[in-house]
Image 1 (cartoon, rainbow, N blue to C red):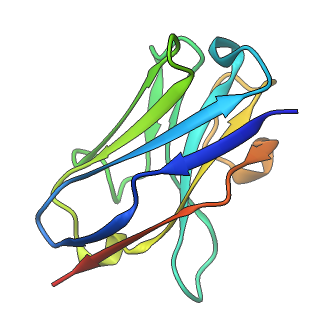
Image 2: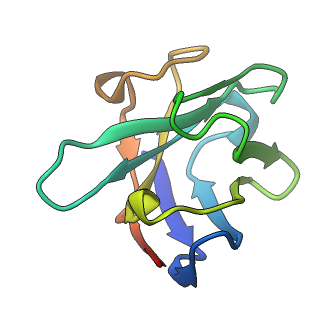
Length: 124
């Protein structure tokens, strides 16, 4: 069992930055694929970013490419999502997810473990 906890959400103005953190425990962190997803009201949960076990390989949704950066610190069992140039359309609950089988994926069904989510609200 992997326990995943997100933190760092909040209310920010458009154009500013925010960093989300996600701590995972219960398995060797360096053996976990980690991903970020988000869900806006009335919409399905969508892929944001993913990072491989070593951190070498990353994937991003087109909507955040160039603005968001995912990175991990395996010594701290933590993955981060640096969000720059935030837009109102980035408003959503952001979820961190982990999987111990896949190498890299942007499909939510491949992630076995999920956090409770953290709210990010971007105002105009």
